[in-house]
Structure formats: structure tokens, C-alpha cells
Length: 440
Ligand SMILES: NC(=O)c1ccc[n+]([C@@H]2O[C@H](COP(=O)([O-])OP(=O)(O)OC[C@H]3O[C@@H](n4cnc5c(N)ncnc54)[C@H](O)[C@@H]3O)[C@@H](O)[C@H]2O)c1
Image (cartoon, rainbow, N blue to C red; front, side, top):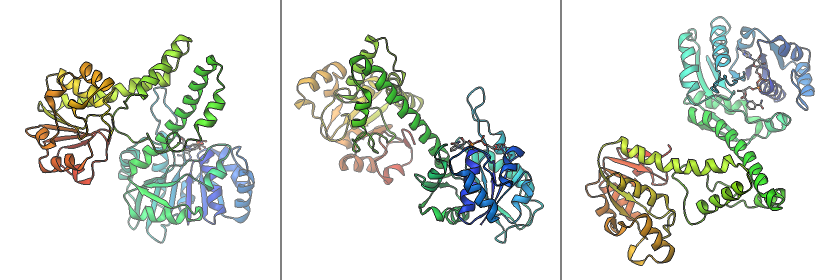
């Protein structure tokens, strides 16, 4: 394929050289001659292990070129990959000036150059951009400068996951190749372009692909800070946190795993809130700040408040709460965020009826009983073991129960509004009018 790569910094130069090495005809474009000239002379414009050799190979083979003129690069090109910078503004927002400029350069160059034989050109963002950029910024520029007769543009987001210092190795072994597009032709073009990687191309919604890159980097940053906070607190107790974390990562069922990584409602139960508070107390006693863990408690509280705010923002005062214990298949109500939610809504004057498949107030004992007595003394009055009775006359259902009785009752008599706290209620529930996911 003929590929134009816009922006020849770390991402663009690695991408251009690797695509050329895979046999594609690659033209790199940069507004900066300090990036273009080295490539023309067979050198890497950035310091990246192995890249100098790969650029030299590409220049010698005649498959890798560079120019400041987008028209030369666009001539008969099938794909444009946009790898320009997306720096932070002083306020922290993403500066999309270079993205807009590159898209405009592509659209304007396409007016005069020879079209690809297919009559189709894919414009693909590889830079990291906020969700909505392709739909709202890229498409708008293209609407301002529409393609000439006989040429169609298709757009996509294809995030790049390479890290500086291991850029080539990362490029050849990406964790995934994700293409966000609603144009099947772009999906096919990128599947062909990256077929040499041997990694299946996953075609997703554009905004999913845009958000994915931020999710990855936010998680990586959180991991570093988490490990650092573990070190910061436990060194006061003579603990070698390297040893702790070395063993910690061996748990691939709960620690380094998909577990605890599904968006949904607040965490709770008899251990997580208690032990997190304990670590934060140890930190205070040692004059140590753990902003990430303190923020974790704060964001958990925010999860409850967010649902209360959403309930208040809507109409109706009759609520069916389906599911009460902190997780499925337990009757443990200690620090259940659902109990907290129920209590706040009752406190605000809402009429609640609560269904839970397992929780039976007459059988509660010990800590559970004490928790109910202090947190929800009126549980007995509002609890029912019949989901249909809980839903009767409800304006709103707040659902975390997944048992068949609850789902069937909801499908049979759905209230005007359903708030799903867990995202596992099934397609039928999600198709109900008035359905809202808590975070989707
Ligand atoms: N650096 C990384 O490790 C990495 C990894 C993954 C993703 N990303 C993302 O990829 C994007 C690029 O990052 P980078 O580190 O390669 O940036 P960079 O600053 O090294 O390079 C960007 C290049 O784009 C050029 N440019 C600006 N406007 C242009 C235009 N209109 N036409 C052609 N070229 C133009 C600049 O001159 C510069 O050479 C960013 O969004 C970044 O967040 C970076």
C-alpha cells in the first residue's frame, strides 16, 4: 500500500520505518525539515534503539521517503496516518491544532494529486486524542474541504501503544491493534496494512478507540503511583515493598487480572473499606500522605452520590431497589454501598421497596444484624422477597440483582426508568425504554 505518515517524531518515524520494512511504500511528512532531512539522508530523526538502521534500510530500498510537501505524499496514497503531537495546553486540555492542520493539509493536497486506483483514502489518527475528536474535529475539517469528484474519504482512530526506548519491539508486538471506525472500508484497509504484525485487528466504535489509549495511560500512571504509595507507607514499618510487590504481582487471578476492572457501582463489603481506612490511618500516624488511596475512598463515595444525584435529577418518588448485599450470592450487608444508597434515598423522602434473593432480615445475626440496625433499621418494613412486589408502582428501578426472578420481573413490568449498577443484566434489560447504565 502507499502510506503517508504525517508527523515524524517518535511515533511517526518508528511507524514509517516499520511499515517500509514490511514492504509498504511510505512517505513521511513533517513541517519541520529537521525531521525530514535526516530520513532523506537515511538517518533517524529521533534517538530510538534500532531505528537508525531501519531508516537507512528503508531509504536504500526506496520504500521510505520524507517530504515537507503533503501533495507528494498524497499522490495515489491509500492511507494517511496522522502522528502529529497533541500536547497539553496550560489549562490541561489537549491542543488539537496540529491534528486540524494535518487533516486540512491532507484534504487540500487531495484536491490536486492523482487519486488512488480505489478512489478511496483512509485518514487515520494515531496520535492520542480525546473521545469525539474524529467525529467532531476531523470530520468537520473534511466537511469544510470535501474530497474532489471520484475520491471518498473514510476516517478512523487507531491508537499507538509503543513506548520510547523500546519503540521498535513494541511496534512489532502491540498489546492489540484496535481500529475505531464506522467505515468498513477503513477497517479492511488497516487490516491489510498491519497484516504483517500477525495480530488480529479489532474494529470498534471510534470513541472506544479514542478512550482506550487514555484508559491505558491513566492505568499505567495509577499503577506506578500505587506501587510508590505502598513503598512510602510500609517503609515506616521495616517492610521492603519491593518484596511485597514481587509477590503481589504473582496473583494473576485478583491482582493482575480483569477482576475489579469493570465499571459499575461502589466497592464495599467487610474488608476493602475497612482495610483501606486502616492503611490511611497508618499513613496519618506516620505523617505520610497517600493521595491515591485517599482519593480511592473519595471516588467510591462519589459513586454513591452520583447515583443519588441521578435519581434526584429524574421524576418520580417510588423506587424499587433490586439487590441489597454488597455482592451477588452473599447475605453480608456490612458496608454494602447498596445499603448506603438505600439509606440516603429514604432519608431524602423517596419510597423504597427492596428486593434481594438472599437477604432475609429475620435470619440476620451478629455483625450483619448490628449493621442493619445502625444503617437501615427500617429494613424489615421495606424489604420483600418478591421482585414483582418491589417493582409494583415503581417509577424507577435501581438494579444490581442478576437472579432470574429479578430480571424476569423487571422485563415483565419495567418502570419508566431503570438504572443498571453492574452492566451484566443482559441485552433484553438494556433494550428497555428508560434504561441507563451507571457508567456506560
Ligand atoms: N511518544 C510516545 O511514546 C507515544 C506513544 C504512543 C502515542 N503517542 C502519541 O502520538 C502522538 C505523537 O507523539 P510523538 O511523541 O511522536 O510527538 P513528537 O512531538 O515527537 O512529533 C510530532 C511531530 O509532528 C510534526 N507535525 C506537527 N504538525 C504537523 C503537520 N501539520 N504535518 C506534519 N507534521 C506535523 C512535528 O513537527 C513533530 O515532528 C501524540 O499524540 C502522542 O501522545 C506518543
